[in-house]
Length: 518
Image (cartoon, rainbow, N blue to C red; front, side, top):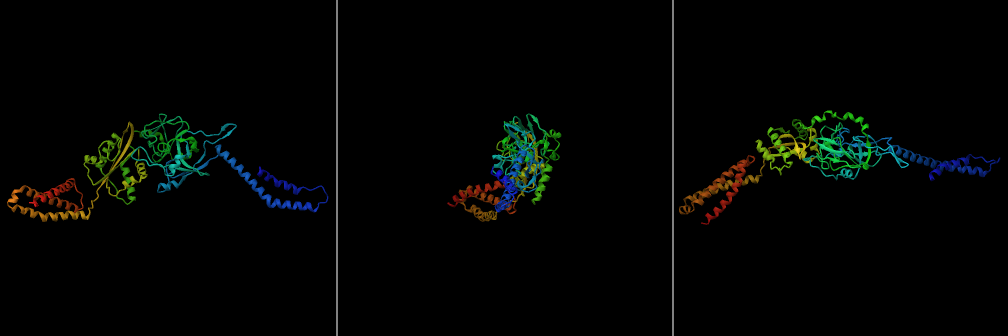
């Protein structure tokens, strides 16, 4: 009210200045009064008047803009981070690290307010109703925790992925959140099976996904489990199904009240050029998605970029990988120790007749292509380091279709192996050389015991056993010393010889104490 009065007060002063009295002669006080009124008007009240009008105009403009925005008549850009969870609709970032991609802006689609509209006389007008396929921006306690780094990692050996969150910043505010696509609305039933999404029992055509048959479950919604969407919640997923942290995982269902902006499906026409034709997606059901040779080519390109020698494809390792893959599916056990089946990688290698010094395996469940599998590994530093390890020279890859608890899936197992020299310690080599010298020194003295006459005859069995032990230990020591000097690994027989030498040394000491006491 004060601003309104202030806005009209200069008009009163202006009227005072222009008013001419009826008197024919104007006195000095009349001129003085108008002089000071003019000064007040020009110096003080006119600027205040203009400022008050500006404030009132700005308030009206903001109120009008807010009303138009809430009514859904205007759009505001939402800035998309480059993490790639909404690829191909929105591009992936070009930065090297995930942290850098989170700071990179790759798109800024204009979205309308959700739910929008306004209330008049108790009725709500122009509000928006979400539809399947809409892209939404939302924020809640879970998204804030994930963005802050509070979300735990998933194991890439299960049907889950620790993908990108794809955060967004809402223009003109301090809010930041996730951007995902609405797949399930209240009342829908969602199921993920064989890499596809089923809504209310029907397989969805999804042209916006990064690739066909690329969806698999997570810890919140595992594969082949039907989930009913309750009132007030929606099920959302990123378009890059193998690189998105969404309702399948720790994000869970999203409350409608947490959604702030929406890009309706009918307004996504500009992005359709990046989508794929889903008409042939069903043909990929029950088929292997990984090309092992293409995967190896891409992996070796990555190794070369890290100055690591390429891996060579080995048929026997591919066979052992296939044996392990089938066993993992049968027992639902991806552990390296094979705790359920007992059929370890070592046993698989023995079965195909392959032997080497170091070996390891990388199992993954999911319908990955070569490019997608490597992108998945890149999210887990321990797996990336494993596949770039310089000590491996050979590899074999197997992709096997099967079921886990009656649910169809694909398992990919990669076996790697290589030769690494033992590089024995100098003191260990010298200890065997010292043993050889010592045995060569004492052996003749025990052999001379055969000339001791009665003492030898009375204890002949013990003396001959001592001589036999010394000869056997000398042979063992010379064999082990030669192998260590050549920096070669021991075979199983030589490992047994070392254990044998320990036993003989104890027996030698016992006999020496007995015979020396005679």
